Length: 96
Image (cartoon, rainbow, N blue to C red):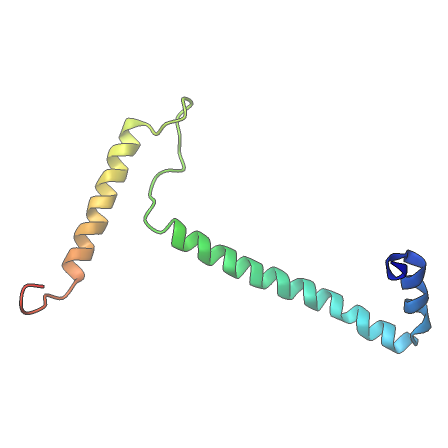
């Protein structure tokens, strides 16, 4: 467990020439930005796929449920989505 000690890392770091330390330091922002970019792209794509057809469920009443007007609006929007989806599909011969 010698490599876990801080003094080991300090010795390893200061043994390196200054140019090598600068080169290694320059990778830190690159790694962080890359990780952040990939994380948010994946995160947003998951959010988009999970919440694609959920409409109107962000506004809640004080008692924890949706207001009746919002429930009716949500059901109407879901019917419109289904109706538009059925209208856009091409009819296939044979009744399938």
